Length: 85
Image (cartoon, rainbow, N blue to C red):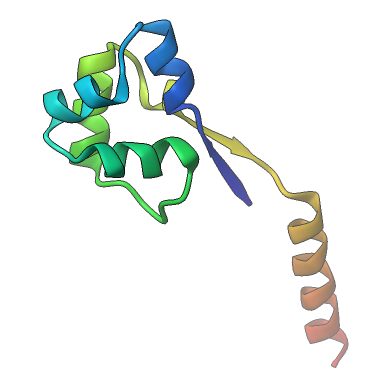
């Protein structure tokens, strides 16, 4: 499973810098940078809501799910082994 964070794309579309977004939503520039790079394990709905309000977008404009075929295959093999054994 992979979640892609497209925050940098939305910032570019809105011609906004990370610093301005950070100030407007009340988080540090470093946290915005971590969000942009996808190096976070989660995001509060409150923060996501503020980002969407400032950038005038939907959560799906920022977060994108892409399936991981290798991970899905590993899960299938594990289930098959459990049934057999």
